[in-house]
Image: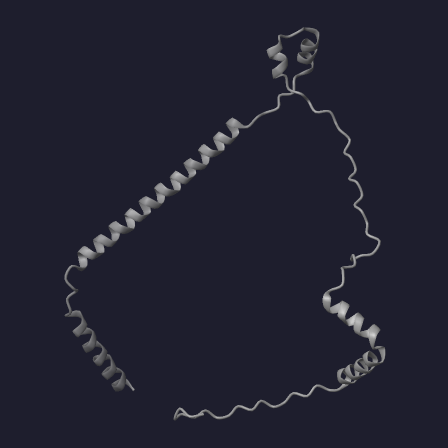
Length: 171
């Protein structure tokens, strides 16, 4: 077994020695350097993109907070001063009204139908059927008896017959 192992080792060493004599393709060093530059540029663009998104988010949140209308509830001593002193008309127009609790109204009950669902008018086929039954009640009973017999009978499915295809163009 040692001889077989040593023969295998010599064979592998010979094959590997022939690989070590091979030179890399021309321009390998330049391709590796270029790939590193591209990766660095991508990371730089990614960092700028994330930074711009964060900055835009901060600006939008700032605008929303700054433009938000705030209801200013006057303090007790300010209310007393406003009530006791007759302010100019411009101050009265700017005063904030504090809503008084308003009792919610109950919604009105929806109208109910006497019969649900509401009956629909008869179609032309239904009117013809009623006319037939009124005109010939015995014939209608006979037809319904035949239908009932057919409904109780087992369903028979005919076997599918597919004729073979002809390859010469004739059918």
